[in-house]
Image (cartoon, rainbow, N blue to C red):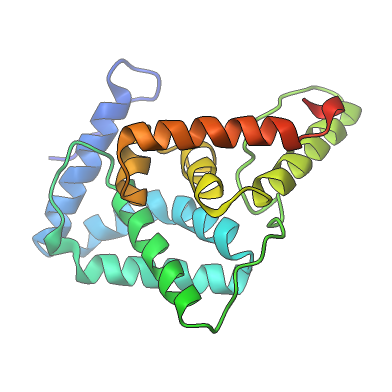
Length: 201
């Protein structure tokens, strides 16, 4: 039986993960509603990830749709690995993006996506309209700086900070060891600090 634990309760994240894996098991048994619930839970995460990578809203929508179609076709192949099932969806999306890039029909651009379409890397909470303008400018500049990182550094920042994946989940998606991910993240953050204008640091 599926259950939900109120946010903020001890063990909430673990319980959500367990619940999502139960949904996977139900979907594997042919429960279309269970897969629909997985879709509802992860579609925005996958879309933001894809949009940040491809910088094209229509293409991001297509890749996101294909991600879930492919996931539905392959739902029987996945088994619990102690991590959030979201990492599996992101891995599928990442592979589709690589396939698309290899097809030579599209070249990834380094220009930043519209910040309103992607979750901000740093949530800045302030009160007045002037503060909101400053917060928006900071996020805009930060997104431009992220776009200037190398491919691997941009990927690790996207997964860790935009998508909120753990080090272990990021390592799974990028097919690297956790130590390599930590080192890559460290270099990426140092590079971002150097790229950010001094007044916004």
